[in-house]
Image (cartoon, rainbow, N blue to C red):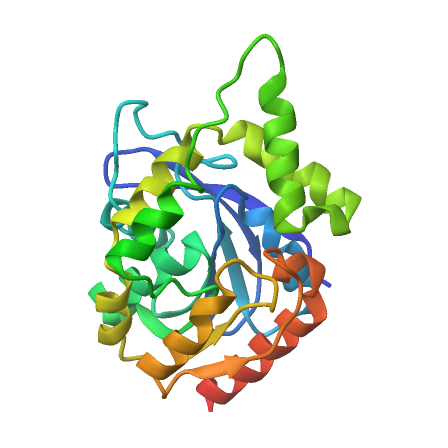
Length: 267
């Protein structure tokens, strides 16, 4: 086990992106998190991945230790992908393996499609191959702000939201995710707006690097995994558990699949 190093990278306009790194001698692996988590959702993965991989977990703008987009802004997914790409370039990272979970999968698929020279492979936990009508329906349930109020009722709104997604399976996870949710109460609204505005299938079809996809049986995006596999029969499908928190609740399964996939791509 190697220590986790924390740091900041700059975007082209000087905003700062926070990241966690577990150093390795081999090709870099870039991790993008779900809404409304942070890069710390991958710490168990770092512990279990082969030590050859140089691992970076980024906090998306509006989350964790990264900068907040202006309150009145509605950045599209393309802007999130570009902000993170700029941070990656600032760190001097070359071609890399990309790993994304839910919103992170949306960031990863657009980055891999638009900047193919960056992507050695793409792994997505909870791909989002939704139609425009399905994105509209999801937007009615995911993205409503839990606005801070003196009554404190928004605290229970956040708590019950996480409980419904499966965080209650691990009290430590529940507590950590609650803290991330409270920090990102408005970043969550902005990033979900970007998710529902993205044409994920178009980017997914354009990806040319090796891909692996997965989603736990009780992941909210599991109903669309078969569609993703049908759209791209070249994508490897990995079985996993862990509700909507696979890297935390099934860390062994998540890391084992990733180790095997990355080793195969590297050959």
